[in-house]
Length: 292
Length: 309
Image (cartoon, rainbow over all chains, first blue to last red; front, side, top):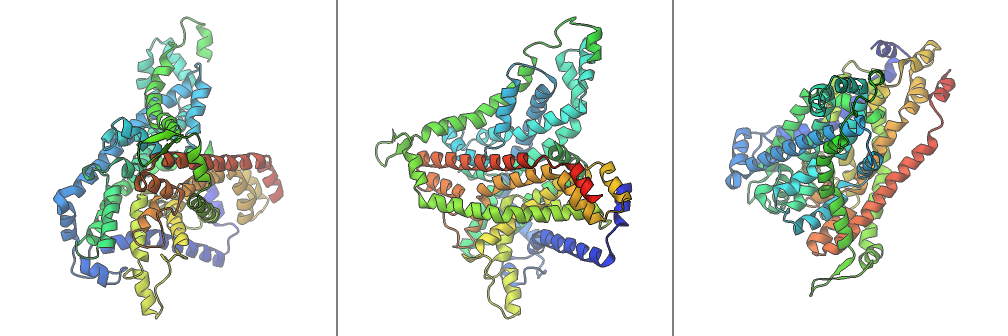
């Protein structure tokens, strides 16, 4: 804080400062432009979407009608997609976080045979791009019945090598080895030590990993796009892109354009709320990942 | 440690199996989700598909076919060019705004950081759909503005404009995430390093360029590394934009080529082989970034501090 105060009074002249703030404002406008556009657009009906200026409101105010249409179109399938996304993200992200806590704890606080090789294997897979894995995953899963199966989506979402890495780094820094040794001498069992001593200290790191794994699954497109052909299993990303394609291709025969726009808001809003509420954690957590 | 030496070897610190039990659930799923698909796809890629009679073992036939495929290489060439242009621009912007935020140019730094980060919470599909409609050449808002000003339709989605447009969308999507990474790294530079320079009367921009930026080289490498992996994997943006424009064909990027080989041509053996080639190219590029970083390591913060003083 004190260094920040020094900075503001130091070495930057008024005109320069004005230009720099203007640059920040321009970038802010670019960042917020599509979000502004989608809010404006969600209040329009199909005719106004095609016929009125995209960056300003145009009557009639159609937001409630759009939301109603969105959740009733094609036997309520949008609600189903949203629910699927929530389930995949919570189970996938939550499970991945628990596995990362357990695995990170083992790598951080134990010495065992094969530790180096196992950790290297996990870290190496950070280099393997997930999308390059997706077609191979499909090929294998089609043989073992995991295509068009929730587990075909959940299993890959449960594995987060970056989560293991982050938790190991976090535990190295926040769960003292002495504390664990002392608990062992006091006669506490391994399970008690993990649950009562280590886990509470791991929480801030775990919340960050949870945030990132939930977002990764929520935003995932390629994997569910490949794994699912049944529409009732789609997450919201795959469903919306299907409607967007139809909206652009099909013109106005089916009134899909307002649904895509309104649906986009529902696909984005939950994560935005999560990020605003949990600011403290993702800011601290990125620090862990960036510094080490 | 001291506690242990007071009570020497009363019993083993923990059961030998304990760490393996903690690791078992992750490693088990790791095998099913990562190693299994890799091994099985490697096996599949050695077979060639035939129209009649299933597939037959063909050693590296699919690989030689991939290496001699013009479509594959034009896709690779496109994403490489894309990455060479997009990643540096994105890194420059991210570092620029991270520095401004770190300098405390505005009191609203917290607000700017949150706002810049928001696109990270937008699924790539939704981001692309939004920009697709905004850039749409018939009824999109930009074409409307252009008409009022007496101009024609802007070339956002034309064959010449589509790649820069994809680059713009991915910068929009990823810059904020990198701004936060670089900002936290800049904030983490020890105060005593900068305070000496402040006392010596060095200007803020000199402190930034000579001390702070060299100190966060690791974070810049991380951002560049993630950026390169991302560009080589390009799929969502071009695939979604392909419904807005005919400028994008089905083999536009390597991942789209893999997808169309698998689900268009139904040749999964070949698709597995190209996945491997793409994976190897990506790992190669990532390792290259890490090697470049390692070579540059020696010039440290002290050198920077001396240069300022």
